Length: 398
Image 1: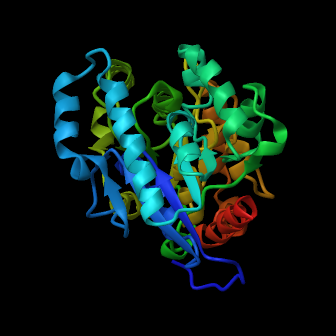
Image 2: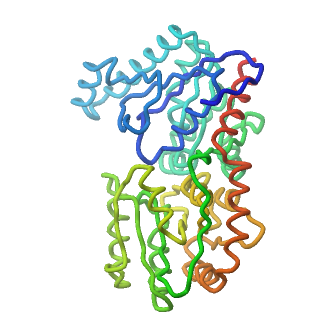
């Protein structure tokens, strides 16, 4: 936490998130642990995992506090009524914790979580803030129309909606949220833990390219592989992929598409697939690579990044050029004074053009990377963003 006196009152905030915490949500850990000391945080979740990496004080897990009910819910699976019973119990647990610690604010992480928490927030007389992060903005309302109606109820009762950037803010407004309730709040990264080591590349060596993402259509990984498959004929290259598929069929299908693309371009000998890795390993690998490529797209089922992948922000912070797409709020996080390396979505030729520019202009990297690091320090430093979030809490609770 940051020991920064803001001359504000102490505030107790309950953070509600289904699972604390998947490896892919390191950004939420940074968001909470960088709040100033005037904010007392309590995390309320259904289950916990990866606590060896994401341990914080005051984690209240339903699976630990209500083990019998949790076990019963898991055995019943999708039996009619079981999810409502479990959600009711979770809501009552939230209310009891709010009363015990005299909480002021409930911060629901993800829009769907916020909807489930409406009654609990009202019962505990809490100010209610929700942060939308991506799939809850575009995918859920499109695939499940009931969520569009549910969001109308949420927007009526919520005190404040936070989102990552201006594009996502517009999307939330189009869902029906009043503009005055929406605030842009950038996700922060632990910039002080990310040394700036601007990459350089010598044409006499192989170009080392990094991809880090879950295997989902919106990540656009096959387009990156296709661009690299063409680039390999102009220079030696190596590709590392950090990430994997989740159990659901859409993610498994995307993994097969990725493997097929690797085989199509005979890249097997040039690709390392490391699967999911701890955040520390991601950063360790980052410094071994010259270029990060992250060509996000709008998937056929409507899923989007919503904002921008935090990995892009981190890679810019390390001093690595990032090739990406004009998708959601990615243009907002990749600003620099030298050159945009963003292609239209699904544009392999565009990605290839940016990669070729990098290999043809290695003397331009330094200025571009310094500008990128400066922008990240200004707008995406987790410490500064923690203070800004605390100011939002103060404003809402006053």
